[in-house]
Image 1 (cartoon, rainbow, N blue to C red):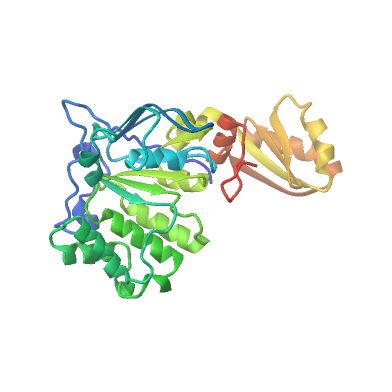
Image 2 (tube, rainbow, N blue to C red):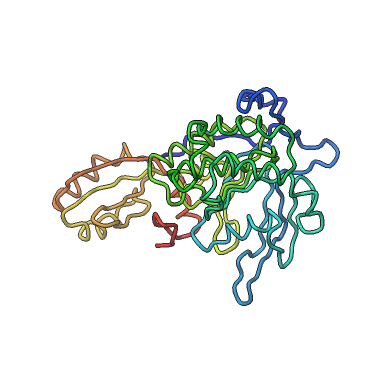
Length: 352
């Protein structure tokens, strides 16, 4: 999926051209607490400075610096073990950092936990619903824990927003994985948080459920809510996020809008399926217009400045190697990740 979108996260709620009132998404009575950066404190929605977390000999976070504007859909990208969940756990006041600072709208997550927690919604990577209760009962327990007024109205609104009204009275154990995820998001939004954390929310979902969840998350954009997504799926981040940070070995190595990171990498890719791909590499690496070339399975990947200009010449050169198929594509966020980290991530989230 090519990166084709650039958004600014520095736009305050009242002036954002794409603003949609929360009532459009959640009903007339739904009120997200004001999320505009305070004119005096100029606090970010989420901010970390030199954040470090060490587990004995393992350095999980090695000086994490983030500054996320209110209303931004932000993505923290990295493979399994990169420190994404550790960062979320610290920001959600569940884990103390070894050193450094972390703040939510200016409040310190260690020293001011009681002030921070009411403003957080969390969807954990691991399932956290009571599967013996119905969806409605899970939401009701959450509402009671937060001592919410108008519980029934809020619950109905969230069920409708997440397309769960028809199945609300089924036991969670009987729901599909995608429906359970949507229910967890409904629960996380029930108390009207200022920041919603989503830790690898689509892990384990099939393609249909994954895309359905994306659509529901996209509906939250423009509501004023700040969303903090962790993921190893680059297509997910490219579609959903206004800005991303690439995490490698506990450090941020690149940050910006997905399109901006792709533009920093530059170039196009030509993919050639060949009968004898190993014979093509030495030839390609002698060509001045070829920036890089490598083999993935039996496909030769060629990076060039401008694919349409180079394609015909490459095909002529590689005819003796037996061309089966040729494809061109723009640089995408996965390419940017490889460029900045030197690693690829497989579909399970592990480094290749």
